[in-house]
Length: 465
Image 1 (spheres, helix red, strand yellow):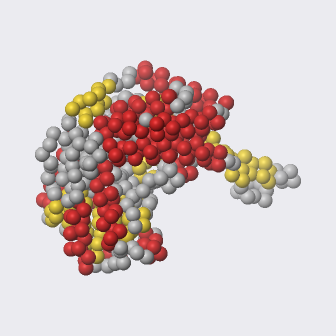
Image 2 (image 1 turned 180 degrees about the vertical axis):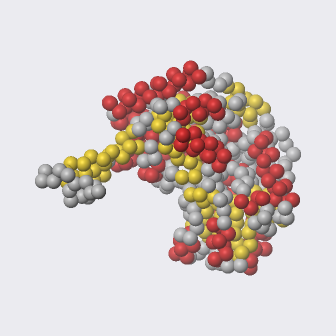
Image 3 (image 1 turned 60 degrees about the horizontal axis):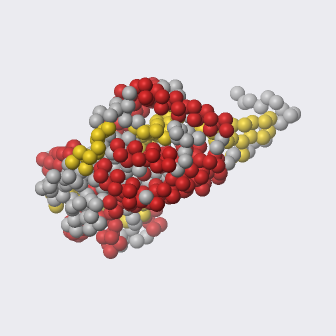
């Protein structure tokens, strides 16, 4: 596996890195394991809280430096990368601020004595992360595990090696001990070795269904806990009472942010038949505003896709949809440039026998579905292998919440596109994976909830069989 930074705007190779040897990998795992043992014995929580705050401070201080690294690695707009740096700083501060609260013991009600449970670290965690949000994907699993006392080893996507390397450097600059997080330039075979290693107790992955199935299989064979976030084909339902002025304001972000390479972006727009033509015109109007170009230029609004393969995959999916009867409303072509650009594209008329109906298109493509009723809109939204997020648009919030409750998904957003904040849990159901990241739910993914029980003196045998 080649770890290279190939700038998606120019297709120029900027950095190449050698893979780690098996001996180097063994040394990394031993160092991380020894650090886990040290933290279990000596705690150091106050130091880790201060170090995580310092991570946030450095991110804010060197915001543009880290944003440019991400842009050069995978092509996202520099302005969007700046926002990602800001969010990572907020996540770091959030878990440092919430550490004491989240680690507090929880009393349990029982008549037979006294009982409570407390949260303990469990050991070294392997994080397997994708390229679309190079720092955010790391931070949302690193920060809570660092506070808990679980050292992390990181297998990042091969196309964003500088992001992975610089994140480790950032944590060390903040004063954290070596081994707190270690970047691994390793092969898939070595990933299997890491999962099998007895010093590694859990694996978190964000990626494809295929990648998730492979990691889950390896982890299952070795009885290791996993959390998986595997993408989505999120529905965006426009109800009869939607505010169309507000709708127009959120459509661009909902689908074209990060060139559409967002698991939770809105990919399937579901609209009532009476509003179908109006919505096609509106979405076309919005997509036509996209300005492609240099992602470092603040005037650019559409970035290139992350790689030549990503561009080819999106174009192949568009062609497959059209070959099986879908209607091309707008776009559908590559942009003539050395960078990996695809025109914002709108397709409609997809039926269940179209191969794309159940696929996620990871690029600037919106699909429009016409339905005859609200009930059919809910049915179409749920007719998916995925269940990550979704949006309900309505001027009546109670109506929107009632519809959202009927959608088989992990997250629903009312009158807005997708949102990620430190305090909001992130995760899905069905083929979108399992487990949660961020918020207090993300804090407990890899902890030992250790029960302490003291029976009443008058009754030392309380087991009920």
